[in-house]
Length: 638
Image (tube, rainbow, N blue to C red):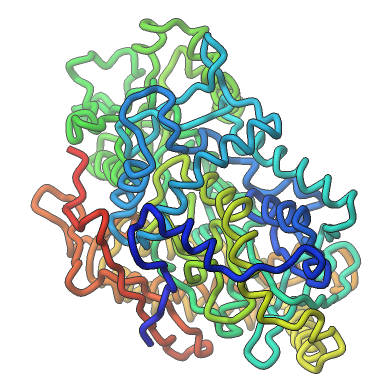
């Protein structure tokens, strides 16, 4: 099937404005008749629920945490991009679009990226009005700093707590609507199934994580804003509760999963310290503004204290390889470069899996107080975890799984191929292509939530009779039965291995074979091993307790079972894409200088997979990508 993204035609500068005008409207009185389900209340889901509630729709919002304030958006550190050009350094909406398209290695949809760039400025105004405490310069104006993949300063920030502050802004707007009664908040609920009636998304089935009760809810439209899936690697920077379950339940009901192999490895994370570590810690990319990355030139210097390695014996490899961007090279390039240095035997720290992020020169140039003002909380976090003072000794960092550029396929209106199912933020595939530039995740989440879905969902709802399907429909009853049967299956296996053991085993296979560097051999091996792990899981997993209570083992079992299915799809997508682009690096496809070698003739498309059942090959559908404003070119940061 050739997919139609329903992108507007004509001059791209007018595309979003014209599309909004052409959308059919729901009048204010009729909005009160419609019910919308929102799964996830991070930046995308929280902003969308608040905006839709403000418009007058009835919104039912769900999160697995005890409060929307605990959504993983809170963990974002460095900033949010916008094209306001406050520093007068040459930025513009078009340049932000160009950097984003190029940063994604020409694998994103042009129209979506233009819209994201256009509304970015509105996001900053919205957040300032909410009281988000963005950093300001000496004169009181909003300050900006640089991020990877750009030669302008367009990133607005709040020290190293930008995600937290933006989430609190969205949460305040959401709380207002909860009090007004337009949004009903359901916490400690995990979506386990999408209910589809006659081919249309009509509701969800969830587990009450406190009581164990299986509940179902009906609506006129369902929105998924449930985040990304990189916990498939086990160790990642994501919260332990982040999973693919909501998206995967939709995929198993027919929603196409687009570009699952596009996963981002963040270059600036605290290295793994032990075999039984449960997650990894992000150190903001913003640190690369003032920190210089290096490793010793000679292997014999790796065991020395960094201060004992002379300046001429240090390899500032990003500055050497990419002089135009230096330490602010994009994440995928920076991650691979760190891995290459460590694979060459020049890594530092335990196991040789680390590189230095050094602030000595910036402290001498700017003063320690200035660095403390910009990044103080990040330095404190680093010291608590490593017991090292980064003001006195360089940080040790190493790449780690961080973000999913892939997600459920959506058209320009953010609707999946299942009518009535909309997907927002990291849960969809739409704007980042094969690599996300730093500070663009928060931009996408708030763009989708505040400024896109409030318009586009109305164009769908006018075609739907409100309240046409209730929870007494046979499909809801079947969904509840299916979820209960799966729960009983988990509890009845009574094997000998824990859920975590299986997850760790899967994670090792994914990281070693489907991580930063992929090959036909490694991917083929993963496709052989993953089904074996999955088969053993369903015979030998041990899930204690019962389903009628708080049971985190049961929650984790469901998530890992989904990862064991989804991991195979991710690997299959990586195997089929015979090229290197962005975060997807096939060692067989690289230029003479080691850079990624794209194959635009054969792979300039979105690859959207239709689930056909376990142990059956999924069907690939394609959406061709056209580049009329930003023309295809070799991606170079040298």
